[in-house]
Amino acid sequence: MTNWAWFGLSQGRLTTGWPEETVGHGQEGVLGMPRLHPERCAPTCRDCISACPSGAITGGLGESVTLDYGRCVVCQRCTEVCPTGAIEKTTDWAFGVRTREALLAGGGGMGSGNAESPPSTHVPRGFRRSLHIRHVDAGSCNGCESELEALLNPFYNLHRLGIFFTASPRSADLLLVTGPVTVAMKEPLLETYRAMPEPRFVMAMGTCATGGGIAGGGYSCHQGLEGILPVDLWLPGCPPNPAALMEALLVLLGRRPERGALPERAG
Image 1 (cartoon, rainbow, N blue to C red):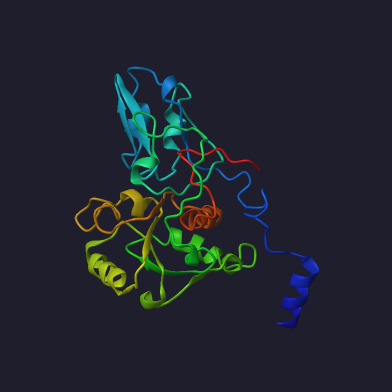
Image 2: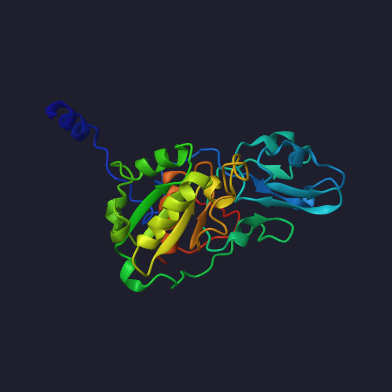
């Protein structure tokens, strides 16, 4: 134990100053969500639609193309087959929004603008500096859980923001759900929600929870949380990284502005 303590001190590693600082989120250069430029689409092309394994891209053949980030598994296949550059790779990671419709880009969606809305006052002020989360795995592959665990490591140290995880739904303010919601997990999920005191909030984390992912809609899975629980924040990604999670939680608390699909990121 002494050797490990000495090793840590000698390395001089500190918790990141992000998000108070503009840099240091730990995701520099990591491949992120694809960006859609519908104006570049060829009228008769459907290559990206055919290649998408989760049905996240719709339209084509004369219709406006729409990219649903709530169903995108970030596999990059669309960017690889697109002949016109209408869908391109980016280093932009997932973003949290308050409505399911805000996850649509192109067509009738929000597009890829950078407009930011002011911080919401939806969450009472008393929760903004102290939030307790009850996480429920409703059929996840554990990719999202790996990113959740990283929030508690020394680099991100989520507790410094006044955000904590709790084992009891009776002590929780936010129900954070991962997975497409399997048939077997639907009732335990609802029981957890009913056990939470008011006011209570729900966050759908990861593409499975926001749109069903690859497994959604099968014989044993729902299409995520839509129609099952009232969702206050949608965070897509397969999986969303720890920085995206932190930003989404701060959006929920009104401490960061909500961004449209797909936000530009500085640094």
